[in-house]
Length: 284
Image 1 (tube, rainbow, N blue to C red):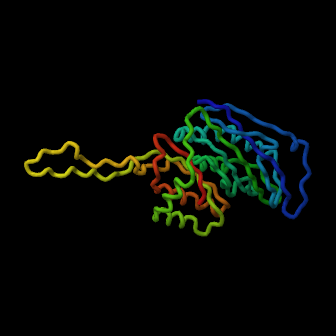
Image 2: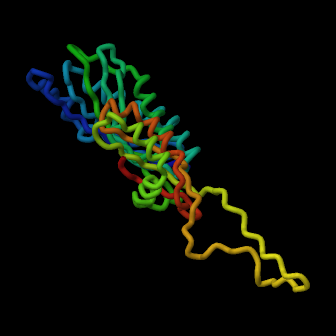
Image 3: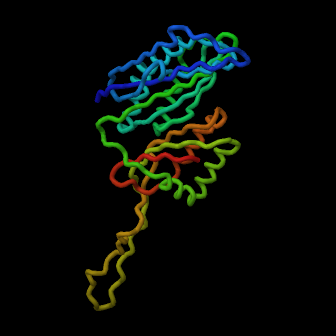
C-alpha cells in the first residue's frame, strides 16, 4: 500500500564551545519542505524550521550539507529499506523518533542513539541507526559536531493496535521475579529512565489438563452432567506476548544497554490483548 510520506526537521545552530555564534547565511533562513510517495508507508517531514538540530560543540559544520544528507536518507533508503521491512513484520507500525548522533572530524558517525522513540520495534530502530552511521556527513572543522533529528511514520488504512495502559506490563513484571531481576541487571549503573514502546499480540500458553470426571460407583450409571471442570467466566485471561519492542535511552551509556533490556523483556508473560494486537508505552 502506498501512502504519502512527510518528514519534518528542525535546523538550529547553537554556540560553539567557548566561542561566538556563527553568522547566519541567507540560505540558513530559507524554509523548505519535501513530500514524497513511496511504497510501504507514511512519514512526516519538513525542512527549515523542521530540520536537523545541530549543536556545534567543538567545531563548525556545514549545516546545509547536514540537512541535505538527512533529507536524502529520509526520502531514500530509510523509506525503501527500513520502513518497508518493518511493515513486512508489523503492518501497523507507526510512531515518532528523536535521534542524537555525534559526527567526528572525518565526517563519520562516532555514536548515535534514540533520545525518544515510539516505533516499538528494535529491528527498525537499528536499521535507522545503521543507515545514518554509514552516511558520509560534512566534515566538522575544529572539532566534532552533534546533530539531533526527528521524524515520524504516519498510520495507514490498516487497523491500529488497541492502546494499552502501562500497568498491563508493569504489574506482570513486578510479579515475575526472574524477568525483573534481569531487567535490573541491564539497568545497573544507568542514570535516567528508559522509555519502552512495544506491540503485544495474543499467544498460547500451556494450560493444565482438565480434571477427569470422578469414577462412578459400582453399578451406577455415569452422570453426563459431571464432566471436566470448566474455567470460570471471570478467570483472568492469559497468553499475551511481546511481538516487538523498541527502546529510547536517556544518554549514550544507557543506549548500550538497550539490547540487554529488550532480550530480558521478551521473556515476560503478559495478559492477552484479545483477538488483535495492542500497543503500549511505559518507562523503566
